[in-house]
Image (tube, rainbow, N blue to C red; front, side, top):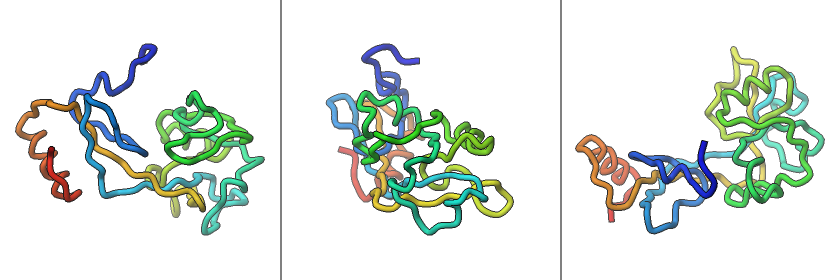
Length: 171
């Protein structure tokens, strides 16, 4: 558990991945990764909203939601600004730290989970269905590390390869 005013960035040993906006401070470097994540809803396959092409945030009103603790733990409970998802007026039934745990809550019928696609297996042979959120922009991800950090050879090779993939150079 982090102390007051402390960030996980204070304990970063090598690399980290953050979602949303990159890190903009004097102590860290960041590299935008080419992949973007899409918000959606994880639900049981027999849920009335399952099988739809997409769903709007407004259609989630009245549903019991299982959300990331990052959303519900925000100082601004009305929105998670960097992800552009307003949470005011929604029934947040539970929170998760890892989506796997959130999926267990969904499986037990506690609600439907607001999450990124592709983390929990859905479809044939699973109890789950995933429906993308309409009108919510995709979320970029950034590889981060401490500025002026000396890397081992494998870490340096990893960073160079990530820069090649993303088309940028270490500055």
